[in-house]
Image (cartoon, rainbow, N blue to C red; front, side, top):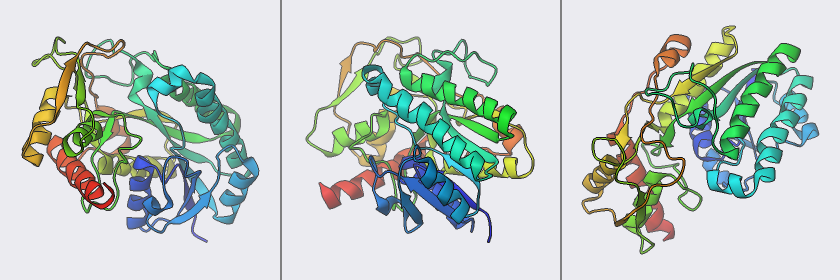
Length: 328
């Protein structure tokens, strides 16, 4: 049997795109997902086991039955605001759940893992672009769970020989180019899906938090990376580990910052009409500008992004427009 990759949370937004990319590359995949915040349709027919990462017996069985040698671990809660209101939910699932997953994987002989981490582990960066040498200083429970799991992975490497790559994403965005999968705006809190929802529906206008930042147009600047590029980064990380690569953490972004105003102007250009929005005061804890130094991703993983903001906004708008026309 050819070794498989287990993708936890593989029915979620980034997970589903990664599962699709792995299958397109003829790599055997099995998905483990609770379907709490996703649907089975998102895996497009891939092998799917409905279950929880904390179920060690299930995880061990799946790993043995499918001859899993690598895990790509997405399964986690990711709502920053909710994490501050319900910290126990995040520590139990994101941290304790991951420990259960790792223990089961170790018993099944899995030696490699790619972890869905986040640039939020840096908190407010000391300088931009943000490189991997910057201090880890989380400013939310969600970000803290990502930082803790990175440390857990280090020690599982020391104790069990598990080698891992922690991918510190910047702002994942966009949808597949054929509009088959994308981000469900029901759960989305990120700028692009929320802005498109404000444009397509009769819902409330978008809130633009802060217009007096020290940026060229006064709005926050972020690094938006196309979800298909992120999927490619996971495959590059798997290949790094398969080739004997050591445990490491790598930023995954474009290295280009785009302001809120630039994003709204871009959506307007794609849609042909403006995004309804209101100006609001700054939110506490929002850095004025953050974007990635991507040099390490190129050097260590041999990866670089292919797409920019134009492709992100075009694919996102077409996906959401199609979904809204179908489901309302």
